[in-house]
Image 1 (tube, rainbow, N blue to C red):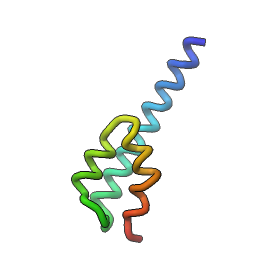
Image 2 (spheres, rainbow, N blue to C red; image 1 turned 120 degrees about the vertical axis):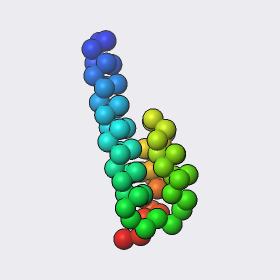
Image 3 (spheres, rainbow, N blue to C red; image 1 turned 90 degrees about the horizontal axis):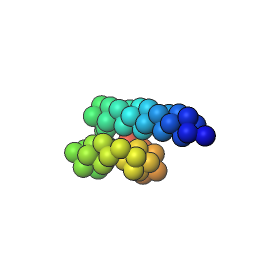
Image 4 (cartoon, rainbow, N blue to C red; image 1 turned 180 degrees about the horizontal axis):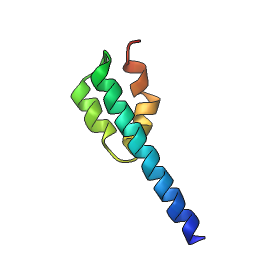
Length: 63
């Protein structure tokens, strides 16, 4: 049972880092309607930041 928790933690960590890097890249390269620095700091928070980015942050990018 313990190896499953360790594996889930590792997967969650990689997922969080991937979303964080992608979000920061999109904020810096595309036109963004909110404060860039505030959103970059928010996304850099380990677990909550990527979830907030998926829920609210993507809507602020103009396509």
